Image 1: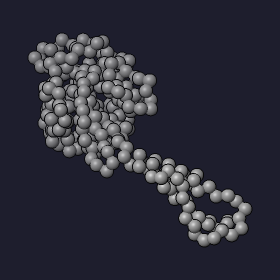
Image 2: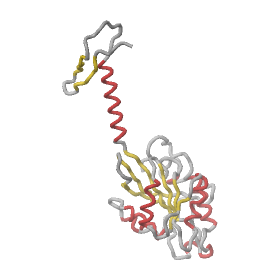
Image 3: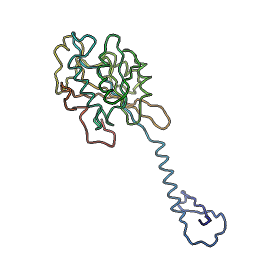
Image 4: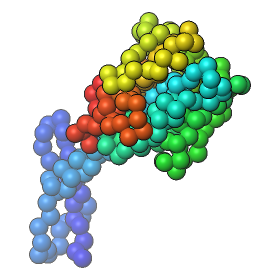
Length: 264
């Protein structure tokens, strides 16, 4: 290799290229291109700066456990188990949807009820289908516990699914400290009918909320070397049609977007 007799530097203010001589040139048979070297170094630096400033995105989908009736005790009804199977299929799909912008879920969590197995039963099939551990770090009313344990399980382009008792879900949202929280998220709805499924009569006989089909989706972002922060929350529908094999519908309907965030 021939000795290099100059090092290229760029004067971006003057818009010209300068070279700084290291020693007088000896005979040479090749031509150096300092301007090209300069442009390549500048492009590399720009790409590094953009990568360092990129924003990461993750989602947390909070859902109510599946259906219950007076005679189902601490467990789900037949409709509740069917919903659990439906969610396992639609939330483990690689195709994106409004509720699952990056495809399959990456983590699964359930509230540990004192006298209810329903949150666990609702998402356990999903955890098994994904091959991930079902996380149960908090009790039924653990809003602050939930906020503390959610963040370590967030990943870029990841979605965490959390099933809880409906009366405690607003406390989970409150503990996340989402800015400009809309009033809809201070109480779980009394009803949220699915477009394709009527809830069993026994569900309404309890005098309780019959809303089982809603998803409260929290968007988190992380910039640079900071921490994950919640930025917004919306509600979507699960689209359950009453059968484990119901087609993924409404918020879980597949979209054509496979490379970028789904705008919701």
